[in-house]
Image (cartoon, rainbow, N blue to C red):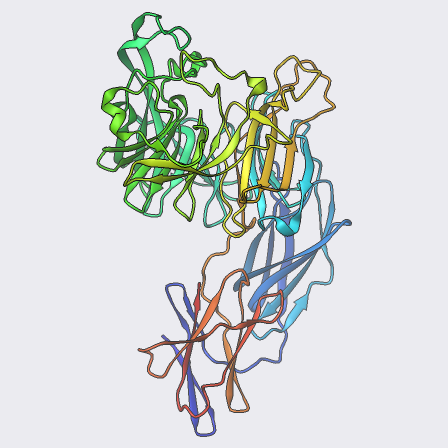
Amino acid sequence: MKTMTIQDGAKGFRFLRGMLRTMAVAALVAPCCEAVTILDGPTFVAAGTNAPLAGTLSLTTDVDSMVSIYVSDGVEDWQRDFYDYGTNHSEILLGFKPDRTNQITVTVRDQFRNTSTFAQPLTFVTGLPPATFPGIILVTNYPSQMEPGYTMFSAENITVKGAYYVTMVDYSGQVVWYSSVVKTPSDIRQMTNGNLFYPTYSGLGFTEANMLGQTVQTWTTPRAYTVDSHEDLITDHGTILYLSYSKQEVPDFPSSATYSNAPLETADVSYDRVVEVSYTNASLLLNAWSLLAMLDPTRINYLPFMDLSFYGIDPEHANAIIDDTNDNSIIVSLRNQDAIIKFSRSGQLQWILGNPQNWGAQWQPYLLTKVGPPFEWNFAQHAPTLTPQGTILCFDDGNDRAEPWQPILPDQDNYSRAVEFSVDETNMTVSLVWQFSGTNYDRLYCGLIGNAPMLPQTGNVLVDFGAVSWENGARPSRYSTNTPTEVRLKEVTHEANPSVVFDLELFDPGNTNINYAGYEVYRAYRIPDLYAHPAVPVPDLTVQMQGGEALLQFTADPVRDYVVQSSTDLANWFDMGTPTLEDEDGDFSYIDTASSGLSTVYYRLVTQ
């Protein structure tokens, strides 16, 4: 590693350039008086049909520099800074809106904060989305109370077969990115590097695509364990968890969920497996847990006979997985059992959260008992998650709100909700913590799909009513005879009486076509940014002596936090404090008042 020394009277200050994991260490250098120069470019190339609102900016400079862009589209102005210092730049630009003429001004800045702006702005004209793109209506938004970031979802146009759009919108519901690279309704997640991760259409693996809509890499799973697109979970320990279904004959299976005296039969049923493969080699099978082996193979709710063409008889219909690292266990949602279950990695069932009716004697010890004020059980739920408090939050679709052979609640009188439970594993009890249904003013019934993740900064909950077929007891459209569904994405406060701070509707209320079918959204997420913010070394730390004290300056991503550390021997490092963010461009400074009187000091930054 290279060291550099500058003398200030009798003092020698030494600074180190290098990297220790996410720690950034830089050498002291003298300020430069010459400005940075753009040697080649800049050019902007639009991404095309896979990501119509994105493109790539390219340029080269004579010295290491960072790039900033300033965009004016005739309606609003915005800026984006890139902190990857170098001479060859290729930056993916994101955040453009449809039907705008964007003027992109490019500025570069070297490590000494000398700048150069390219004289002629670049032009990027964005078009309107395709005619099959969903109609988006902003119902409500209160930006100051909302979770920062963008809402990401994959919208399916039910009227037009094969029309799927992964979509990102800002706080006002304006589209800032979309793509049709995903060809099937599935769980789509943003990776830590900013790319998208989703199951492939073939069911034989997963795909990573960047924000230009380009495939970055693929994973091929074992052929005997095809991927069910309900869940694709990258764990924190280098694996991928997903669901896979197969078929099996089960004797003494009910032939009806409506008539209790219907004859039993040997049935060809679909059953689910939770599968774990290696992230680095997805063909390497690590675990496969059969849910049929843990549960009553003949227990059903009203739903197993609904979609026989795709699944066959479907008594489980698992749709979500939680990797519970608190005790190395797995939590799974089973829609057609009206149950969320937990089991150990050894395959031992631990508890069942759901209506206790119709479970046999073998499973009675695992059923959680209600405690506290009365509450409704979950029915046909989707997407449970663990909150920071250790509670379970899920989207309760509410189908039928009854178990077989009991009177069902008609759909027009039903409701869906986000609901939070607290499980006491020691006493095998469950209590209601919180719920949001909107039943007092906007009763929505969504008989399939949906999710309700808690948002990390505000604690708000983003509720995806992903396929609303009844709103306040009425159909969404008075024109269509095709039972259309609308989507309502609601961000609500996590309070006893929740407030709606964001409400986005996907629907075309003026469509008078009798065959209009509306839209569906499997899951929705609030992502912090369109861009990734990796913990990377800070390359431009400079130190100057001012009045006997060391002034540290650097430029870095203001989204992240930084700690200044010092050492006199490069072996023992001590936290000095956090630097001050001087402006929105990411300029930081720190004055080391303790440096006076020291003969040798080393500095480094820790990126958090």
